[in-house]
Image 1 (cartoon, helix red, strand yellow):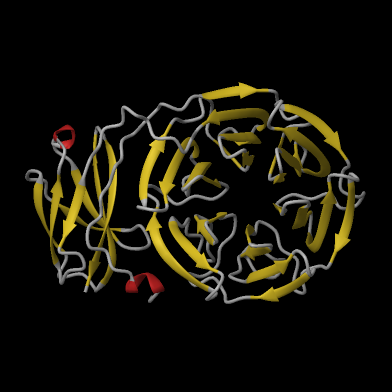
Image 2 (tube, rainbow, N blue to C red):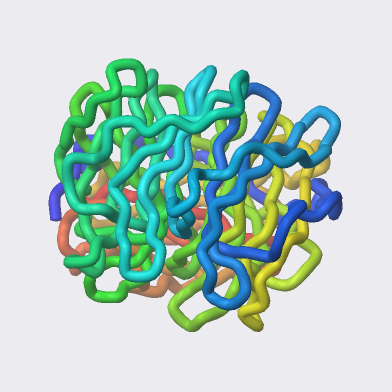
Length: 403
């Protein structure tokens, strides 16, 4: 499959990565209603608005609550109208208003859109999506346009459609389909006028781990990285500073995670951060204040629904004591043979080195010799690959372009 990322030129990739636990998670006031998963949330100013979802007994709900990120206090707000209870909805916002789109209740798949005005406390029905109702879609907002990606309909197990909703004009426009096939319960966020999407389930039940970047000007997607771990669903991704911060989720083996990762979009460096000091979880409601990340509700490994709320300060901050590791690959692009140089004495212990394709599949293992290693992938098809280097000190990911 050919994507725009093949036209990117990577000459030298410098990695600064160390597993770091400088961030500390703290448990704060519980979500103020019943335990639930598959809820949704949006942020307006310093307040997050959370609700809907499914509570114990497989009951979809429509109640909503605000969380003041300055005082860290919960308050009850107006619920969605009676009959609009749902799970798997998508939440988004602009400067003044919040929105809840789609979702599911029993066999009903919704294409409706509700707008919330925090000044009046009222919900208003807006123009519905001119297509089948869907649930588990991902969304991000760029310059007043909300992009709804993928999901599941009553007809299709997963879909690859992308729709753009103009918040001011209250109009929908269908965009180019997602290029790597269908996605359900992926994680998405926007940053610096670009959209990002990672993870999700496709039509073949693959748990995906590719990260794609969306350019709204050209209406095109490009794969920019691969998560250094298993594919997931039910994870969350937030944009904080120049980083994308990923938390929790579930993999194809049913393992629930409590971990946190960040990816710097400037140099595409992955770093594992402190984990939530509790059971792995999925399908929680996640939001941030630009300095603090919050995770509330969800469901754990034992399928017990939760109402805990956790916060972590400064997940996009760099630990001043982090070990600096430089990894260079050259020539890059190359014609099959590359030199890999690891330039830090703290990472000179024997490491496992793997070559991954753009889908995160392990296609080759490289023998460790010393800090200067030759990589030969001339037998592999031309295209973009990732070098994964791991030992007890951490994981590093570098890109190589085989031409």
